[in-house]
Image (tube, rainbow, N blue to C red):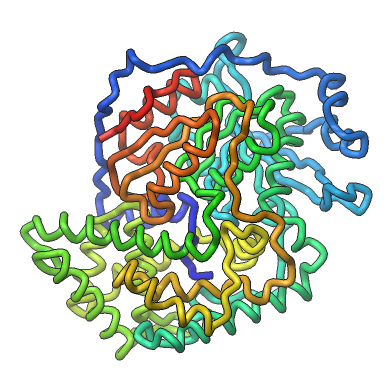
Length: 521
């Protein structure tokens, strides 16, 4: 996969941290069109502490030892956090075949007694991003009220990060998949990416073959229920971003009676297949680029021109110029047209339009310093090819197994969806063509019938998980409630909208849902 992950919020945050000394980031303050006094309650909070007998009576006998294990928390990371490990079966169908380890971290609630609600599991997305590392870095960004009411808990999913990882044995430098093929050579890029993905698949089959069939979202959702029980919680309270929404929706569909307060921000549509997910993403980035370009054109100095059309032509020309004369520094450091497109994608996701203007201004003047800084921040935070691909390729809603010929035949449809990014996302259609493990999930609607209210958040110009996916997921869930943020960038909570942040906190803290049709502007 490219250095920029398909979903997940860490790259945006990593970008801001890495470039804070270079560019000031302006947050958008938002207001909410829905009056807070019209919010509806989600109902009383269920009892939190489940007894061992109650847990044992609700699970299969051969899984009971996992559900009744006790977490041994130990101080870690300057003693502000506690860390633990737990065991889950590698194969839930055959628990006796062996275990794998999950790494967990928590920031204990500052509140005590009645002020404490329980544990809130958080997943930042990806797939392939470390939830443990995310919580370590950003626990303090959650509101004091939320930190008082909840133990903030993160678990690296199976195959990822500090949990038993997918280790395919061969490190690859960022951008290795392109092998220097220019972005203008669309057929060549499709072939080189397909060959790269075939190499990754062969290495993973050789080094991690026993684990690969068991790192999909279905098994990760089952793990979440084991974690819930180990935390002593009767219901799962969950905050999922991006891919984390797919994980959360899968959990809710598997265990609807155990759903507590669940927020799904930057939603993935479980009924959409991988081909259309890539197509939808290309379309989403085109919308995001044109939103950026329109804003840029209204400014005194815009490096890509005075109109949206001119901006598209300018970006194409800059990509072509870098392809003709790539900038090299060291053996594996090569900045070309594909690098620039990846950087634009990252800045649109953040969103960080000020940095994007600076990057484009520099490239146009022949200075790639800002581009190099931006690419470096992505390399530091992006998930590895191996865990990201391993998870994606087990879900037909996330993966694509197109041959190079099929990808090339699909290119015109992708270019119609996005003149600037269609080819960029078309290249990924062969990601799973040679993957040795077959999908364990197919595209399907999820209803989670019987679950408590689930808050789904969609951003109108979200490029990575476009808004129509949030609309679709909220409609599929029998208890789904959609909150819309009329804004830019990937995900909405903690992105600068006071309206969104207040609405989410009111739901997690008090069970208050926004009214139907609520829009934060």
